[in-house]
Length: 359
Image (cartoon, helix red, strand yellow):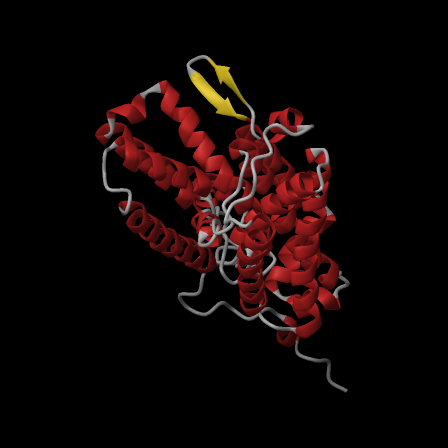
């Protein structure tokens, strides 16, 4: 029997014009600059620098050292919530109830402590339990029914908005809770959630420190733990994640409860900073949290984003909010800037992702 032709085992000659082995777009080594530009938050960072330079030039009060403390404070109150919302978005979900959940938390703490004449810390922990329960309810209903998170949390948003108004009027006879500034434990709770301290000519609110601490913790969880891997996995493809053993149900519910925890914390800040809470507040803030996450590079489709990006997105909001005031512009322009920043961020993120795919 004749031996097989040796040529049958020889590699085929590359076609004319084909890239040399190891040089195609899929295996080409990217430069450090290309890797940097491929980061999801780089567009927001460049935008933040541009916004800072702009208001530094057009608004003289923006240049004063004391203004930095105000900008940081505005950024932190949005940023704490934006961090939790960003993690949820990386996991592939939204929470439209996040804004009113902040007010629900503050009202719970205030009314439990005031109506029952208890130490305010009892109200604080009661509010924590309620906030975590709201998050667990949203997550459980989503995974059990398969409904989109948009619909689930839209229902929660409407229910919480109604509860906030109706219960406040029923219990207090007013649209605001009673002041708790003279109750036991108030000063200690204020030190934790709403204190401030000077750093040179700048007054720093404690929420700024909590914001940065939560950002560091979130970065560690997302990049250095199994739970972080689960978040990216369920956001990228839930069924594929389940097939390889990722606890999808636990991850989704935990992410919604994380939003609940952040809502509790921001609610406690509002309560102890202002002593009382208006029951109709919070509506629309959920859009700010989502926008800060999107501006920071979180994909609307899930599975893509970072923790640092929403920090930059929230800082952008703080600069624009105060920059408009310092420039003596009509504050209605804030909405215009918000929409412009959001559209620009989405376009930049789309460009970066398409460029990364082509490479």
